[in-house]
Image: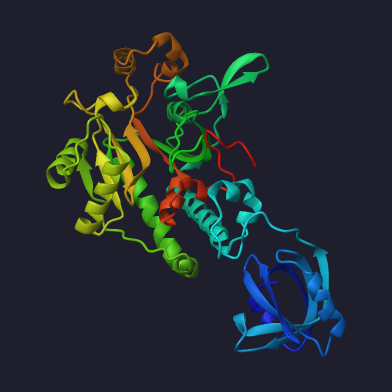
Amino acid sequence: MAFEELKKEAGKTVSISGFVEELRLLGNLAFIILRRRQGTLQIIAKKKETPELFEELSKITCESVVNVSGLLQLSEQARNGFEIVAKEIEILTKAEPLPLDLSGKIESEFSTRFDNRFLDLRHRKNLNIFILRSKILGYVNEYFQKEGFISVNTPKITTIGAESGASLFKVDYMGKVAYLSQSPQVYKQMLQAAGFEKIYEIGAVFRAEKSHTTRHLTEFTGLDAELSFINKLSDVTDITENMFKYIMSHLEKNDSELLKEMNISFNIPNRFPVIKFYDALELLDKKYGKKILDDDLDPEAEAILGKHFLEKDKSDFVLVIDYPISCRPFYHNYNTDGRTTNSFDLLYKGQEITTGAVREHKLELFLKQAEAKGLNLEDLKEYSKLLRYGCPSHGGFGMGVDRIVGRMANLDNTKEAVLFPRDPDRLTP
């Protein structure tokens, strides 16, 4: 029963179960803070009225699960405006000494927290992260359905890779060699060749990369979309931009209490600022003294750009477009300058969360670009087949749901936005 519904039972005997978050014995009075998903409520016990119950309280440990029966009475001093005067307390399961502190007074080590993740998740702040995540994914589905996209599920065991083979997890599949999907890219494009026109997927993605950073995971949740009959890159970026505006406006409208509790606010301009890759390099060098040695932005550069556009345009977002051919996959459409691709990254609060592009849908250019990248065309036989029988112009993007949640919730480590994270060192719980 919700707390607001429970409050209507004032003057009646009620029964409720929950976790004991706190227990205080003060002479002839005892206070128990009982925790449920929706919050906490106060239980009091009076020694004069229930001496036997009062004696039993010494057996209760914090985080034990109990059932309390008693009189519900209104109280301005109590949280939620009511409290329960206990008549009976039954210990359903008694908690042993905890391996980590849940009071918030002692900061547990990261490894200890994740070794005991189900306990760590009892923190209200951690629960809120996953309530927020659930809300975001709900609004993502709403947005794409309203825009006429079809929700799909592509294979996660495959022989087809779209990215570097070095980042594939090898699987013994009935004696055959297979891999965990590192991207639904090929299947997204197959569905454009099939005439689906607009599709999106929310699903697991696997990357066998030994990256020990606060943003990388070996298993993460990807949000991918692809659409056909496009004419320019903005046909793709507009979908991305409008999706975020939809999510954030609906969070502000429907979930303001959650945002307030999590101290979340948004800086969303009418249009996301856009900067070309090489213009970004010039800005970083001339204004901030940051030189980029490779053909890609490093985390420091992303952070600087994020801060720059927050100050300049009051925007948490910036679109960086026209990345060099050297750092983009062969299946991206190349610009006529012979140097850059028709692609983009979306930075949110100074971190890349989305990569997208117009795809190369013409077979001869697709094969030419693959060969120039040093790829074996025989290995691309299945991939290239989808372009041989008529394929519309198309493009799309992929983004990490975990990163979106992490940035929105202002988390220091993306792993905190994942229930049970996987990285190069962690395979349990």
